[in-house]
Image (cartoon, rainbow, N blue to C red; front, side, top):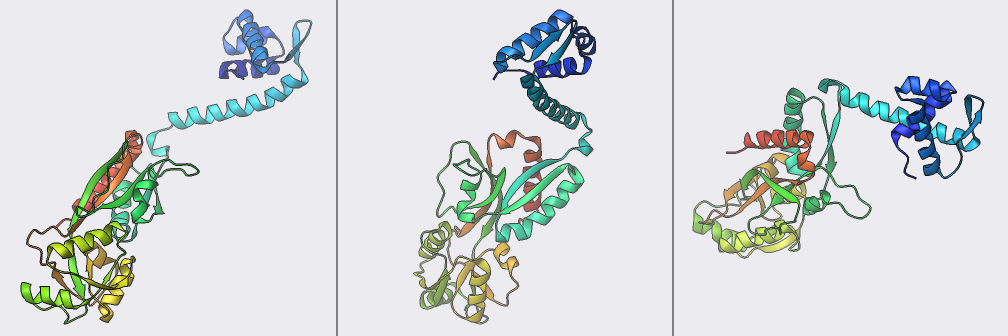
Length: 308
């Protein structure tokens, strides 16, 4: 049915005024224009809407039924217009942000604090995402609503393929360090490398980006890690390392997630390639929203302060 807001508004004015002339006066039309609007509305509805009684008109049963819906539509239209006309301070724009453990711990609070100062009308709502599925979180799919922005990870040693329509915004680059129980990491590059080859390890599975990147970093450093414990959760990995169950890799953000008494040492890789990048993933269409751009700016400034 192809009726318009103006036709529905004419129907309501006619019901309130009772005559074509009264409706025309209320709307600023001519009586002929009111008649044309109602003829078009009846054609769109596919059934008679009015009955003439002298100069007055009354609504048919179908006209009354359509009127009830028309008033709801017109009220919703008025609320939308009022919302757009309101001062910026009175508006609310919701931005959904996918987060994962270490990045959320370090970045969510400062980001929302910046937004409260800069744009208090922007309401950021966090949604936990599996960091391995951060890209999926911002891409529309059957049966799911995409997030506006998601924090994710980019591993140079295990890069993700680009996805059309999704921008990757770099936020922070971190170096991995070897983490082990107190006294488990000797000094000196060769002594450390020998210890890393002899020790048990706690690493993520090989079918994860971090798992692949960790093993590539170890191989480049001349280390073949003996993976005894397969763990994806950062806090669990650090707890196992602290207990002496094995060595693991972690970045400053990961170490900040859980207080630990572990020793740390740089990965003995002369290329310095053992690293990860915290990124923001955003659809190109979502990035056109002012509120989303403000969130991206706040994320950028927050993580800039965390850079060494």
